[in-house]
Image (cartoon, rainbow, N blue to C red; front, side, top):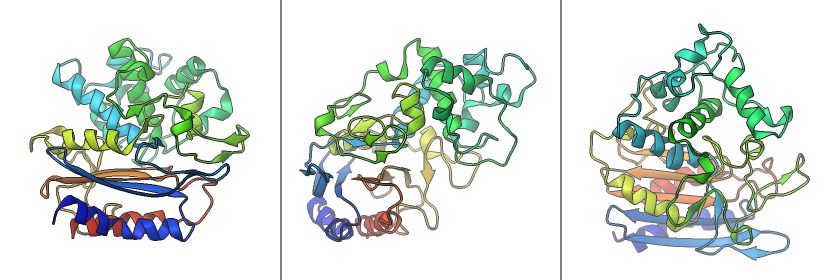
Length: 328
């Protein structure tokens, strides 16, 4: 089946969610390893004042930042032998827990953080401690994080983001990015996200994640914006990865590769993806999935948190139904 027919078929549950008012707007894009693509879109980028979604709409990619920017940057550093997967983060961040050189955080490795195999918590409301980005970074480094079982952790990727900044000697937000990806998108062309009670306004062109906002807008876990073409261009490069690429190997847990989530029963990419498929989702309603065996990737970009994260959008079911139709 060609990409246009496949995309049209897979867009059906997305279009239904938009028509029912469960999701304001959405863009679905499919791409193959050669870069050929097909895109469908519908709905609103913003409800009031009304603005339609278009193929050039920028979406807050949320946790897709973890795979598109942070994981990619770490793999680039691995390739030039600046670090090793089992190098402690403290080699790149010598002041990590500097007042306790026996602290567990000083033993955390790049592999463990990328695969979410640490004692670090899932999330912490760091923004409630202040908005000075330098002070918050220092707080993250010196905080004694309570022990616990491995969980998917924003904190681990914040640390990876700081490590990248130290190793490259430039802020994460200053990294050069391909067309269609940016930490500073044109606000007028962005899909709106939530009315934030803390900031007192609807977020549009400003990162939705409160911690990333307090850290200056660009962090290892969130802050990236992208258009459907920007995400698909990235996906096409990943599709061309060799079989021994680090992101295709499972690390530490059955359902994790470096940075990515591997296909498993019940995952967001649906039940029909190949066993070697990988993917990731973003809290704002975004997602990217890559099926190496089929030679196809797809991204579903929505603003499902607009105007509130507390609405019942059914995004989990929409993602799975879409993935099943892509891979059918």
